[in-house]
Length: 157
Image (cartoon, rainbow, N blue to C red):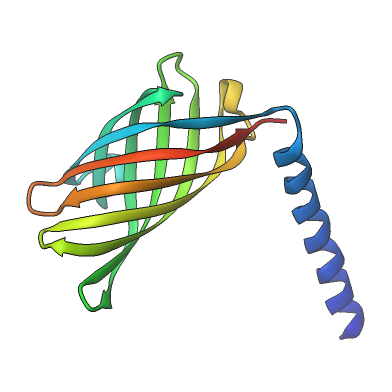
């Protein structure tokens, strides 16, 4: 049992140090800009799940599709969402994220949005990308309109 625990700790340390090395490498760059989205309801693009589409400006820029993977009421009017995004840049490269969103009521259906997204990969110049993005802004769940600013770091091998 102790050997299994030690092996798990060693393996986890190797994975975490690899990501830290990639994040510290010169292959990383800051990203920032604005995201404008529209919740359009369940779609086949997301396997029947609630879908958001929109655009992002800044560095980089392009369009995106987001699929809601879970939603729950956290109490006190706070809503928690998990999403996966596919961002397609104007050059056709993509990067993907796994998102953890907390929505605090301002004046429902208007909510303040805070998102901590982990960059999980991509295609083209973003193949095997890692990194993070922090987003802050608002979503109106009555109209489906989302407006947030993003900033973070994306790294490629």
